[in-house]
Length: 520
Image (cartoon, rainbow, N blue to C red; front, side, top):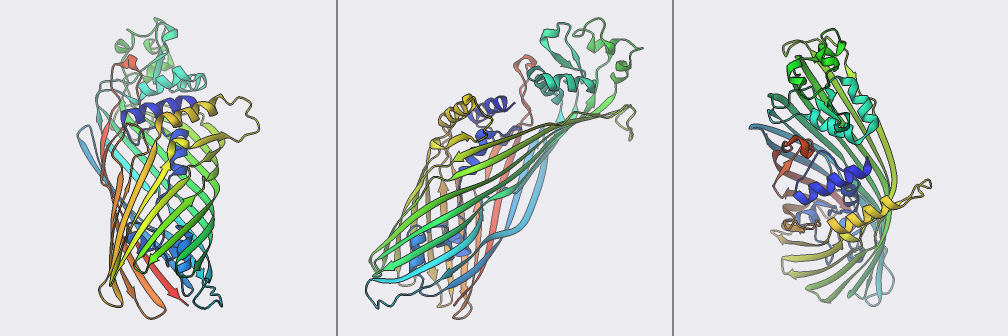
């Protein structure tokens, strides 16, 4: 099953289809490896720049050398509000779904530890610890329409051809019958080209979190050095369902493909009750991922003059152990007609198909360089980050695995599908008054997938206000790139001569972050 889903994922990626019905290990190794800047509202409003900029809680999980800029201790908490808006068109029917959710963005503390060296040598050694949530997976896509081109039962018969266990199970649904030549598998009792109501619901939730312990020091107000240890956790849940309501065939429509002794053709056979009735079938797929990992980072910021910072930040590959669980289930109900509210035949419930995989993912090394220019009442900063996603490595971790063919196939597929990515971030800050500042930023993440040139980008705006000599508040608003992509609820084998149904989805995501902090 895992190998077949891998093939489907490769086909989907090559076709440029997003949010297809089957997400696989090949997709998940990228989700585990991907990093999106997180931290305080100040840094997020400036596009997430932090390689050559310090003195902020975000330096703990960003470039730890930035801790050396602190002249006093600091504590802050950041909360966010994430809003997703998805508009889908499926067979001419438009569905809008809007989802908003509050959550924790960042909490951290920096302890300032000055030395007694006066104005020369090491000025301080500061320590920070923070908890950050990034890669927020919270989203829901819902679309519905009337499909008169094909049926999900055709997809399910394809699965019967691939998997013997499901074949013997789903034949109990009485929505399929064997071809007169049994070697050809099954065909649907459901009417393929009759109008059928369909609804697709894809709910995702989870996040990538990081707990970081960092140290940073300031040498002679010229060199700022730092290092960090990061403990990564990963949580992802995906609940996927496709609902379909339609009619089954009559005996004359079944006869051309079935054998002469088919129970559907014999009025005295219980199977005949399933002809010319209304059915409702729902196919479920639930995915659950949990992972933990570790990495280390080193950073340096050089200050050649008072108005320039030059920064370098290197994050080691992250080793993450992952547990992936998948549950597949199909349910069908039967009604005398579409207006009936109670079923007249027993509900079909498939035996849930469960699978659990344990494996490791080694994410790529990330390296970034940055430059900051200070002005009398503001600054401009920019980062350039490099990561080679084709270097992601999948590792079997189960002691029961003796054949590493699948591991080799997945690693070969990673090299075939993914490529290096260069990410760019730029942001600035302007002091309106001694207390009030305005910020803006832009970040661009190039596509890590071969054959896809367009990447993701985010634009941001923000304000900062110093309440008094100890307290401050920051606000950021981030608009993600508006995307338009195709989503297919299921695939179909070539023998059906029918393309998979496709919805056009337009997606918009907005994030608002609020930081409250105190210096002491």
